[in-house]
Length: 334
Image 1 (cartoon, one colour):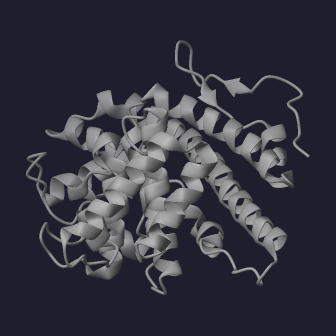
Image 2 (cartoon, rainbow, N blue to C red):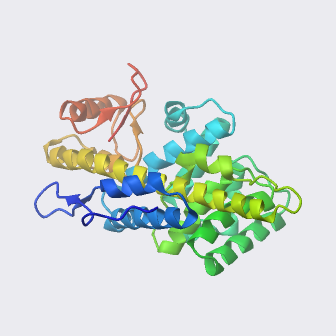
Image 3 (cartoon, one colour):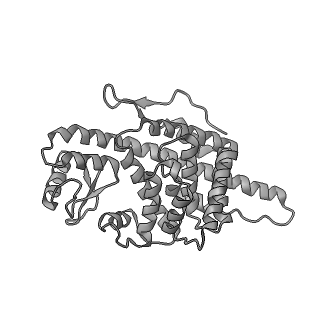
């Protein structure tokens, strides 16, 4: 059964005049975990996505960092599902400690695929050109354009003819039907959701729940004549995918609350920074998962030493965190 709210969605304000921070109410967390039927799961997922929509439409200054932090989590979960060993730290290194055009390895390509989802306008994600690029990043090389074209057509039909549940399960069915890597299912579902809701950018959701979502991507074949069992299997599949999407939405909302507090601190100390290029560094910290300080950045005009000193100052002020745990090739982010 679905739990009903005892009170309106709780929100709190971090500072006077600021938009309210969205806080997940306890009844919704219970509802997501207690759903027993597809209908219950759909209602709980709808409520979770509605709350997530509130966060997305605020379009905060730190939204880029939020999306890219979720993309990193999705890439790490996808790598595990594909039998790879890279964790979030290793994937972050593959991106930040290489130069543009360098070979980032299969794991690094997965991260690029998820970063593509988070960074490109949602309306461009399911074009033939973009689908071909992301398929290569997920390790699938189409021999001709027909397969990509068929996939794009199938996704377009899903987006225009299916409801929310059908669109979600249809994304996974499209992956299976076209013989694509199963890890593409979450990516396509997230892109379809963003387009359905009219978001400017997609939010990497289901990739971070890959252990649950991908495990149900292909339903068991029912025994001959066992139509009821087959229907039950399809219902279980839909319920599992809905549960994964609901959990992912709540996880994204929780992350947004933490990043908002850190971003507020960074913006509060930014006027105290006197280094040339500091404003550019602050802007990039708000728009990306992390930045490295191992080499000077032409976009800031700062040297290695200047960047390190600036990051040391930001850490001292409690505005950023050092994420690598290393003494050299250090990495910083909200």
